[in-house]
Length: 117
Length: 119
Image 1 (cartoon, each protein chain N blue to C red):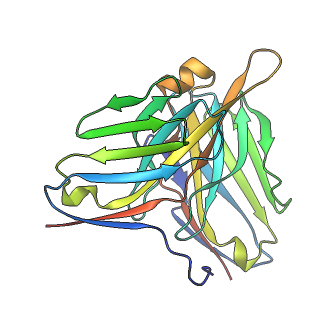
Image 2 (tube, one colour; image 1 turned 30 degrees about the vertical axis):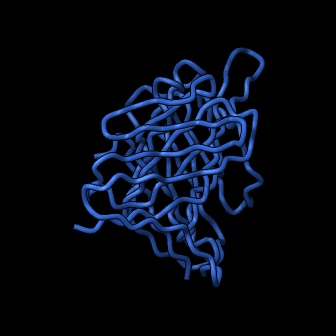
């Protein structure tokens, strides 16, 4: 079982809906990530939070809004999505810093399978 | 939907054979490399890593080789088992350092290879 927990496992939403994806880790990691994975493609980085601050936004459309309420939780708020946003959304965490990263590379959750209708 | 004609590389082996999965990475300044295994319905799972100052690293049944001259990474799996069937991704990490001492590693995945092990 993964130490990064994502809920829900599956989500179907219409283009006018507002929903949120949730991610939780209790490994004491201080960096958390959102990745998007389309079928038969590698995961692509969306956002990075380091010490609860947004460090990196990989030019993600504003209909995706990340939030890091505390060091254990990461949310991704969804609004006015398009069918092409349907994908597997993966959360990951790592211990921040180079030494910590070498000793504890990214740990991934099992993702939320999102379908936009 | 999926791009027409886009296929991941595939490797089919018999149980007990050795497998070699190859990967070309893009950034000569990448500091660190990881191999991940992704089974259907799951997130990527860490297999083995190697730092840029190393050429080879061995784990249990797996070996990673790094050739920085040609920016090539390979994963060797000994005595492949049906449970090894999955998509394998290489990943390169480039470290960013921020003022104040914080840092993070930007992890970029390669395209992936589908490994199928036949009993």
